[in-house]
Length: 257
Image (tube, rainbow, N blue to C red; front, side, top):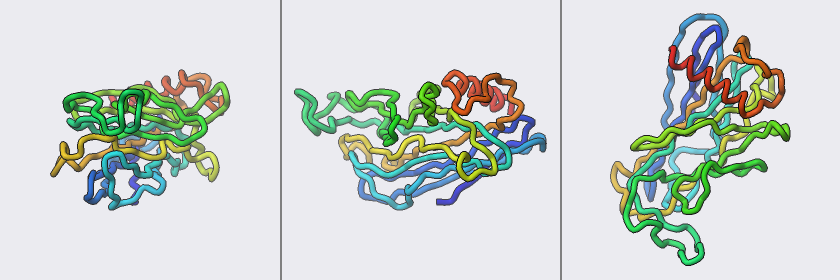
């Protein structure tokens, strides 16, 4: 997979890079696209980063109920320390979801609702030791698992920040609770946000043609770690509150760009 990098050159610099996976469901091909944007504002400081999605490959087949490896992480490839964030866009389609296993009186393949509705069609699955789910899989309407960080146990990982919902997709935002060091081979990369994606079970005939082409968007955001004006950043593992404070700065910077 081709990696693209984007950078903003700012006194407190921010960078965004995107990797979008176009996955064609059922017995057709899937492929990747990516984008690149550069916005040079003031050439004082810089941020460079890239997304690694593990063994995720082009031209894979996926059917309802199937899974693909997709393990996004962020690497600092620049000369400045960074704090990083992920924005993940999960597509929605109008489908009839089905139970994926026997649950009490409900049987595998039974409709969860009597009619089709607009829902997220993918689940994000995390395999780490400190994994967490934003929402439970009961029934499996919205499921987003991630590899969670925990400052109280000195565990580096991701902090869930917020989500936005729209007609065609939902967006989820995460921040990493550890600074990515520059010029390092050990502290310059995050753990994976999640490790695979699963297409939920639904009536497959409800998606056809162009409707079978769906995109999972993964955007990485980086902000230069120096001169942020935030106290308490000397800890090796940040609290959830500090990660949210940094994310507020990122949003203000993006709004001003």
